[in-house]
Length: 110
Length: 114
Image (spheres, rainbow over the protein chains, first blue to last red):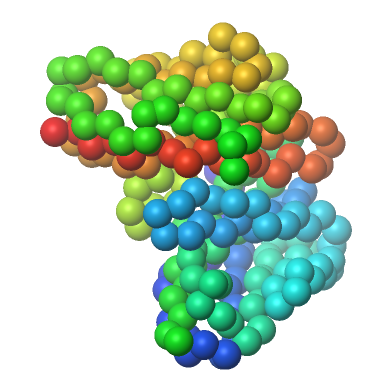
């Protein structure tokens, strides 16, 4: 079945440093979604990418979808303490099903 | 956020107990999901209901029994669970329409099986 690998598993940064997490799928995806889960919270939808090579930005967050629609990345510029949490990618295959990566836990030292 | 609610938020049960988890979505969505979230594992999809019909049962043991009486409510009935079933159980909903189907998660039920 479809597998989604996400690296790194953990990332600790100093406030102000940049952060990137990467996602790779074993199969071509129809879309990729990104979620953020704060400590003690639940996953919250951030964004969806659909087109090959698509790039979207949300303030300091930049999301990319690879040309082959099998990989994606999330880049945060100048991290802040409010960015702390686990970032999950989720690959869309069939109409209703998402396959989640294990997530990257980001901690930020103030 | 009150779009998807779950009760109870915490549950401790013995291996011989029977309990139920409840999820309600107030977003008018047409699909609902149960996920299991354990430490150091990806979110595991358990069940999917689309228009009240179960469309996915991801090899989940029969001690977990879902019920979807209408498009707004989803239950997970639990019986004779094992300690390894302790986890955060998350409910989610989405509106299936072409490619766009972001999922909205509830706060989860933290389940401990003793």
